[in-house]
Length: 233
Image 1: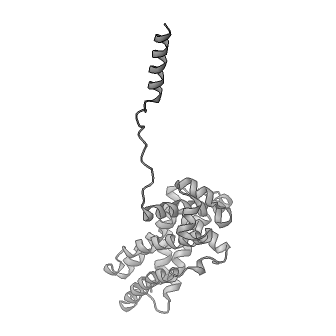
Image 2 (image 1 turned 30 degrees about the horizontal axis):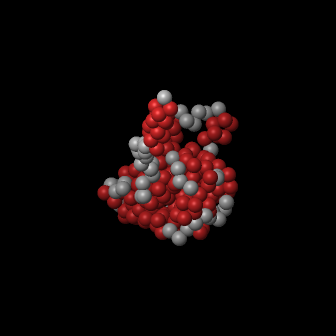
Image 3 (image 1 turned 60 degrees about the vertical axis):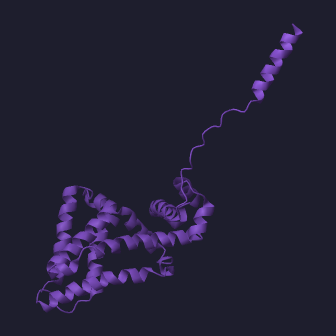
């Protein structure tokens, strides 16, 4: 009987020592793709900075939402302020890049102007984060935007596009003389920006639903006509 028990114990021990089958380890969710990683960080950081401002946003939260680490974010962007500047640059880059695709040179001057105003109004209405970023940076008195080495250069084509369509309109006798491209740009930006930046305060004071599609459509029409009549002879 003792022999039987001894044999059973040896069998049990041998089974315990037998290596178990290897478990399948899932592939890491993040691939070694720096460009994609940086794009994801910028996307999430845009939302964080837009909602909370530079002071309120937290690198910890950005790292958690992007499944990265603070160390990785600092590796790519050096600091929280460095990331913030890149977010601002990316916001302006996107709008200028889309403007370049409007092909305004292919349109008659007044139609080109209308197209530009339509685009600006629609862009601002559909990109509240962009408006919030600009508002927040104005609170900072452009302290961080002024540190950018590319922001002014990327905005040069925007003024050139206005200058070209305006000069074509003047030479054809459609637009009045004496206007500067920067003044036209400022007017378009101001009228388009207000509808997003002030929608809640303006709507509350005057009991208007600024988010209503009907109100937005009417406002869009008014902004376009205001700019065209400002420039037209």
